Image 1: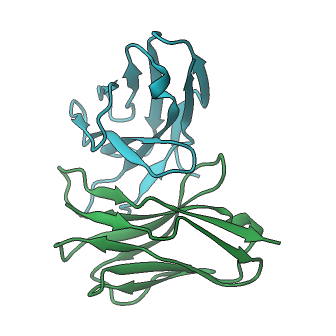
Image 2: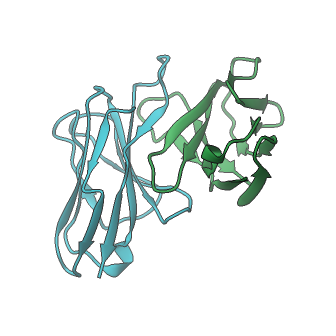
Image 3: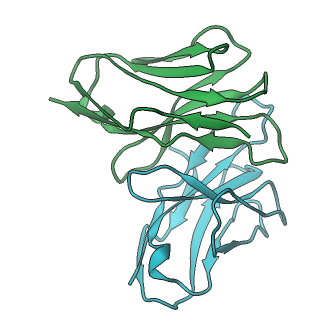
Length: 115
Length: 116
C-alpha cells in the first residue's frame, strides 16, 4: 500500500468558505501532483511541484493554490469555495525520474462538495 | 506535447474471459515510460503494469500483460482470466523522464465491467 495520505476523504462545505485539502507522503518523493477528477472521468492536472519551494500550475486552470514548504506535505487551498469546485481531488507523488521506481503513487482522494 | 488517447470509454467482459484495452500516444521522444493504472470504484488508484520504452520485451504481471508497439505508438493492456475485482476505471499514462517538467500524461480512461 502506498504511503500517501489525503484528508479529509469527504467534505461538504458552503459557498464562500476557505478550505485546505491535505496531502502527505512518507516516501521522500521529490515530485508531487494535484489532479482534479469528476467521478469516473479523466484526470486533469491542476498543480505540481518538483521539490521544496517549487510549485507550478498544471494543464487545467484552477482557482486553487498550493504550497510546498516541506518535502512530505503538499496542501491545496481554495480561498472561497464555489459549487463549480465540486469534484474529486487526487494527490500523487513520484520519485525523481531516472531511477527504477518512476511510477506515481496516489492518495485515496478527497471528494469535495460545495453547496 | 505528449497526448494519450484511450478510444474505448466503456468495455465489458464475462468473468474468466480475456479483454484488451487500447491506448495510443503521441510523442517525439525516444525514451519514456508507459503505465496502466487501475481505479476501482471509490478506491485508490494503483499501478497495474509499467513498460520502459527502451525495452522491447512486453511487460507482464500475472494476469496482466501489455502489447507495446513503439513504432505504432500503441500500448494495449490484456487482462486474462478476468475477475470481478478487475471492474474499475483503467487509465493509460505516459511519462517522459525529465525532472523539471510536468512529464506525466493520462488518457481519458476506460471503464471496464466484469460480468459474472
